[in-house]
Image: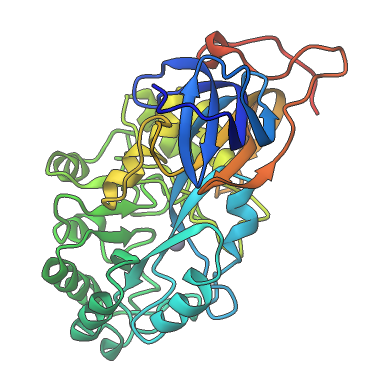
Length: 408
Ligand SMILES: [Zn+2]
């Protein structure tokens, strides 16, 4: 699977375990990167030199991750944070801002966020023209949700807007019920773009909200523990949510400050009900916990029994598919060199949900390398333990428990 082999490359990753996130298989390989693209993949590239070589000691290598729900409009909105520091340490090469900007503020988003971030940044446009400048109530005034203005804004920024966002909960709508959602629906339909809908505390009630959603739309905060949770009191998937899934609506995590409940996620995963996409909803009030970053969010799903490759598929291929953005299931020669490398650390790791429940994981996902268009954005050596063993899993260890080590 190599193209023409050169003698020298910009970057070589040695001894990687290339993971195919769709089927969970791994292949041991060296990877050469040149001019921002994957240039060669071979079991070994022995006599080849590079400007920089990185020994990955068997770490798992995947396409760069895509975080479908972030808030990066810092300095201009309540929730925004600079996304580069958190994405770079996380293996995330594409970050989707979920509606921080509305029509009035999208020009600034384009100029100061999209234009300055090193992480590839795309956005859902908030149907509220004021976006998320304030903590909430963005749909509490009719004039804010201007369909024509939203459509004009998307038409001017089609290259970076991937959908329409509406936050629908008791506070955001401020007594105006489903008016904002109806307008978001109208804009998304006119533009043939997906609609991402945030849920939390009703009213409006989940049952009513779902009637506005169509195939390809995204229900974010799907594991919320608030009143609009997607489970019945008995812990099974609500009928109207099953029907919504059957007609093609996607369930996205959007962990956030108030939207990931271990209890809800656990109940659903035990019944084989997996989210379609896993995202952080990382913002100013959760980046220092309990969210931290995408590997921490993925570790929570692994704690609940999700396999590594299924979890990673939710923030690569599945997330890409949700917004029509190419994200392959494994790194491949010729692709843009968005690459992430991870190990699974053993130990004792307390992980906390949005409601203060802490569960202790015996393993967690740790990022060691983020490569964005061929440029190294983050590297943490894959090091040996004090007793001399290699901390990284070998291929067989990805789906099987391995030696316990003490907390670090
Ligand atoms: Zn959000």
